[in-house]
Length: 396
Image (cartoon, rainbow, N blue to C red; front, side):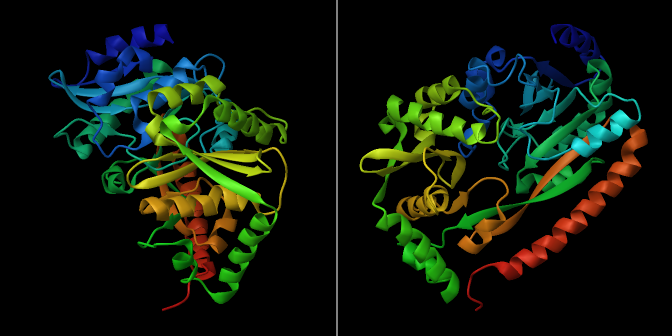
């Protein structure tokens, strides 16, 4: 990778007279102060330097992980414009915007799809500000310049493509002005309408759905299962270790291993504890399950969970209903409970579109990829129309 960086450094001298594209092969090399100058106070937990640094420190990225940090930075006359956290990928695991069919198509034609570059947060399918702008910088200017440089970037670094995953909604309009392929997806989010208690939320549901949720919660209570919330410095190292064992057990059931190492979570607890919420389900004072959430002023993010014992409805209670309770108690307006999960519809989570954008260096694939994205979008739009009719809320 260092050789690739050296080759690319020659290319930067050919950039536009005033704007330049720089690449950084390490989060740690960039440093906290340089990274943080691109963040607004409203930036989500996954945009933080501490999050990406913990991934690298812990070995969750780099090495043989299939994720090699290679962050992009745009400057103008040496002044910061944009930082784009990015990774060179040698596989398509842990991205949640699935392009295995694209990789197979390349293989059929005797072409290499890997390595590719993605601008995203590893293992984190949450929409957010993935193009981090310096104060006063304009997104359209940064994206137009990036589009101009992508052919050179891919050529110099032998990359098949570039992928911007889970763009935040305010960025969609500027992204669509470029010539990239657009893909849409669907997730399920919950919104807090200034509820004062859980029953205020369920009162908005149809009688059948309200009774169903009440039954699921009652089954948990009748078994004597209790829940505790630990946030920030209140999360003990012992609880974190027990959570990690549960996290790994979830993957072991599928005969695989979790992407993230224990040192990753341990470093987050040290470096950004205020962003972490740990929910513990216990019976007779013995832990049964854990769920780890991230939190900021506007959103609760459901991320990782695992259980030591399979209990009916325990997943729904730990990962969804406890999260809703927390949002209501803390006045948090938005709950992003993670990727996939049509079962969330019946529990009041609303379908939301996600957007990603894609550039392929091999132009011969553009017509086929365009057709693929169009057909996929039509399928998702039809699904969204159905999902709206399946929501459990009363009609006004």
